[in-house]
Image (cartoon, rainbow, N blue to C red; front, side, top):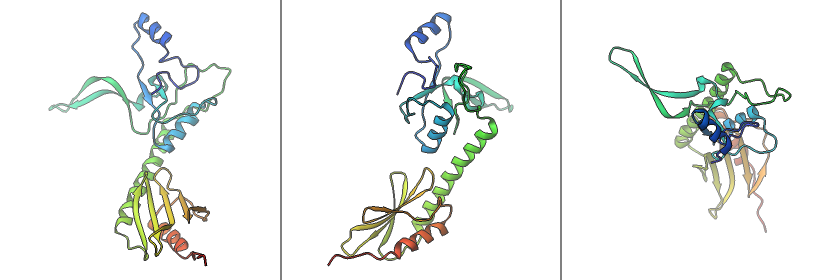
Length: 223
């Protein structure tokens, strides 16, 4: 994990900044790793707008001062018998689900940035990611119990739903892959990707249409 904050003009994590903060009695800022979820990572990158480097999931970090207070867990909460909430400060902060950096106090005024992401936008982002995850899990559960055409099989691999077709020699010649990140579909026949007119999958009917289209493709045999 990178020790320095990825946000342009932010010096948190830098050795000289750590030393300066220590002299001033300023608590060291918590660093949060860039998310591994592809959609959320893209949203982080667009919010930060760094052009010289690509934000790397699980490697690059963004410090706490770039997140709205509503996005950060600062305390452990315990509900007491009388209904009151007892707060205990966390030793290390954590981000709430689908949090996105939106504060950039170190950016020079001469530079322009995307308008800070407000709560409504954050809620929309969170809702989008949750909907994709929910749809993916629903499709997975349906496919597990779904009767497929002859020679077709279903499995999960690399965070994707995979439908495969085996020929008479038990070789995988047709493949449909549905990504867990955005529900987009990739189809390949004999290891060559083909384009089909299909938007992201949203229901089992979409899968059945794609499956029928690909299943109907006739395989050429060599003489």
